[in-house]
Length: 325
Image (tube, rainbow, N blue to C red):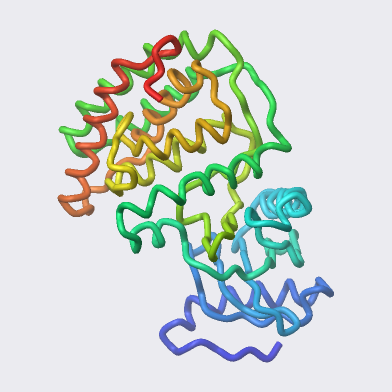
């Protein structure tokens, strides 16, 4: 394979990627015209995402660099399942083009546009909230086909939150986390009393995994898709912005933007139990599961502390009989 090599400083990074791509090309006919381009993301020894072309078409390559125990095949199957449902209109996923699961490689359509988080930061504060219904509509469309009801298992999620919180290096956050855990335990019986909605969800749903191009929104980075409680992904989306104190509507609820929660509550037609217990529970989980690093700048810790305080205040007041949204 004749490849235009990257600059010398990147050779050490690119050579194992190129070698893996060569191997896939040699064994997968649909990859014969594959040419690598610039790296998008690289986790040494694990995975690489990079631009390139396939038979002259601009594409994105997703490559697992080690044995992934079937993860590539599962991701490829999920992309193919979603594509017929998400191929047209303003709410989309990238077209799956070609794959070599045995070599950990997936090729998909290259998306143009701006990641939603970056777009929101670029807008006047008064214009940001208008983009939330579209994000909620994308999530609704993506999950609607696989939605179902399963026995609620809040104890499992509490255990995960407890394990993450035990690693919190900042004492002021740790003290707030212990109180958030107490409120999650308080909500546990209300949640366990009824099944909760599940679906094959994105798994890492946050605003930078939605790419905006005019009115079109395309969901990317679907490698973590699996069946989850539906509102866990909603909480991930809202808390991602909440921890960064991104102003949208100017009104806060449960530590995050109230308009964001309302957009998803409307799109998913959430019940009082979901609005008052399940979603607040998962907002608590998402706050605790992302442990702060001691290398983070002080303002980031200050923002996290403020988010925790706002979340805790509202957690003490919410419940299935008294939803705050």
